[in-house]
Image (cartoon, rainbow, N blue to C red; front, side, top):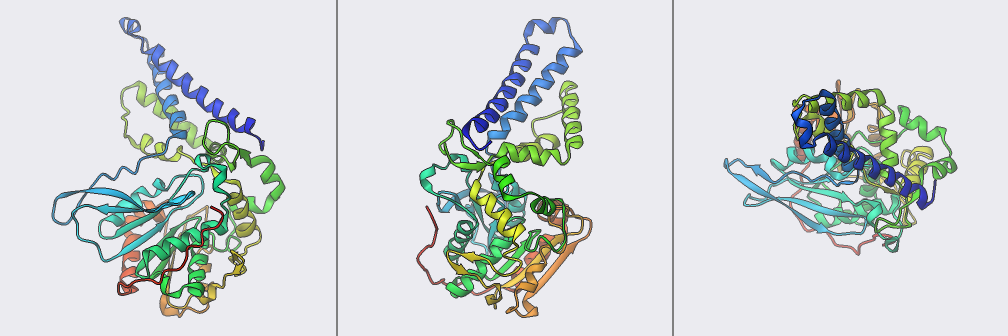
Length: 425
């Protein structure tokens, strides 16, 4: 499965299903059939519409959908997305509210690189734009990055974060969601040693596997159960001829999606059958609950093979960050060197992906940080998604994070600039 044939076969299958859906919709909607109403044709048209949209969105990058924002003055202001730093594997972008005064809180939202685009954090961004200057790590789809751009593993990811923090300055408040939590912690420690004046003011880690063995889940058990050879043989493929990254080794988004959906196949199957019925009876809409969720959920991106494999090997299997043995660019990072960056962890009591205990382990690693600069919160009844995008985030967690930022803000200053250390680009 490591070769282009497998990648192109998956894309061919996806494309064929999209075509079948479009064909069914066109055929069942033929004007002559309207003369004699037939429920079977209505159902076929509905099946075609849902099927075409389902397979089409798998290769479409979702839009941020944040065009305007109503400010305290009661007026709608345009939101412009500016690229602050541009890199081959990911950019630093800024959500600038036109015509509004610059907000005192500058937030770097570190998006996960785990199969979905940064737009997965759309609702998180919307909630923070209200009274913060929001910056986001916008990771690129590996299939669109030429092989000439080089490799990208977890060390390169960490160095990207280091450069993003340097660019934004010491008054920045960093929020890392899910997968990047341990690497963001490592990037902060790297700065504490290499460029202390560029450290952020605070670091909030939300639902991340800092110590995956602290509370085992199905995800961590999988990482322990399979060998690296098995993962490379069954999960890694080369990008096909259709994309700019032809020949690059990746963990394909379509393969990731099949893994996501297999965990709750009954629920997903019922959701699609119900949607077909709603479309058939005229009860569905373009932006109903089903489409809002699956437009994002089904939009997947490829990860570089070296990033995926090094994450499993070094974070989950060897636990390098949990043991404070992580090495970046030949330098052993000591998390204990973080001495004045306030650190807060947030976990969901019902999180079955990164269970309570995995993220709070970061506080024990910060041996050089006084207890007054440490905080933690476990949200009762919240699952993984709810702690950064659901009702629990909006009503309970976000106010606590804002309060934590306010309590640990630094005066605005100019960070010491160092030569960027982006590896292998």
